[in-house]
Structures are given as C-alpha cells and as structure tokens.
Length: 226
Image: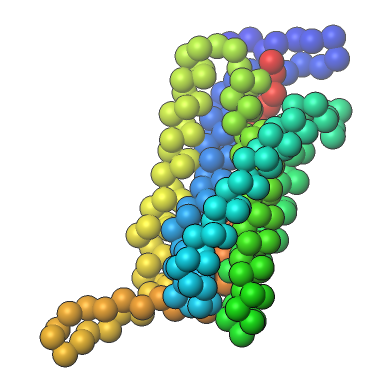
C-alpha cells in the first residue's frame, strides 16, 4: 500500500506497528482491570476486614458514580483536545499514569484503619481507579475508528486486540495465584488456600508499571489517520 500524502506531512501506511500497538492498548487495560476484578473483593474482605454487606454497599455506590463518570469522561475525550498532534493518545497516556497511582492506592494495606476508615478508603480508591480506567478505556475504544477506514484492516485490529487481552488474563488467572495464595494441607489431606494480602501491593505496583509501559507503547506505535 502506498503512503497517504497530506498537505502537512506524509503518513505511513497501516501495518504491523499499528496492530502491535493496538494489541498493547488492551493489554495495558487488562493488567489493571483483571487484577482489580479478580482480587479486590478478596483483598478487602479477607485481608483488610471489610464485611460482606459493607462491601456490597461500596460496590453499589461506586457503580452509581461510575455511570456518571463514564458520561463525563466520554464527553471530555470527545470535546477536549489536549494535544494538537493527536486526539486520543494524550488521554490514554494521562489515564495510564493515574492508573498506576490509583491501582497502588486500591491495594494499600489499610487493615489497621478504623472500620469507617476502611470503608472510606475502599470507596474513594475504587472511584478514583474508575476515573483513571475510564480515561484510558474510552479513548482506546475510540482509537479503532481513526487508525484506518479499511474494513479488512479493522478486522485485523480486532484480532490483535483479542490477543492483547489474552495475556493479562493468563498472568492474572494462572500465574498470580501461585504468588498471592499460601497453600497448606489440613489433617484430612485437603489443600487449603489463604490469601497473602500483603503481596498484592507489590504485585499492583509491578503490574501497574507494566500497564503504563505497554500503554506508552500504544501511543508510539499506533497512528491516527482518519
């Protein structure tokens, strides 16, 4: 395919860099989302000491907040251009940086806080994480439409997005349990797994940094053309 020439510059053709970069975007989102969706409830209920009813109320309140947050962030991404060079990449990078901060905040060991302090920390941290994740995920979801207008190339992007989403799922679901659980055998010979809550903070730090790096890779490899 020939390069597309515009009055200002020459745009490189769609290729493997766009596919790899687009896959890395879902990979970055996945490392954060999979960690939170898989381990946050266990962390707060088994390690921090938040009760089941209190945790349910926290989730309900945060989901109400998230519904409002989605509309606000979506409108900002759509109407506020924070860079002349790119519409979506600066939002993805900004969201990636804040995602590191709030991912770590979410898994902070606050078990010595008062009960109300634990509730407030969990609710605030989860709401802030939702803002950061939406700030990444909304522009990333829109990126598909501006990379190419070729239907076949769009299909290849979807394929690579699925590949990018698979790696975090493998790491979180298969590798992490070996790190964050302690396995013991009871008198009946049955294996019992208990959560090592203190391990989730360093895990969150490492995975958050990896997520930021691959999201940065998306901003460097993907080209907005449409």
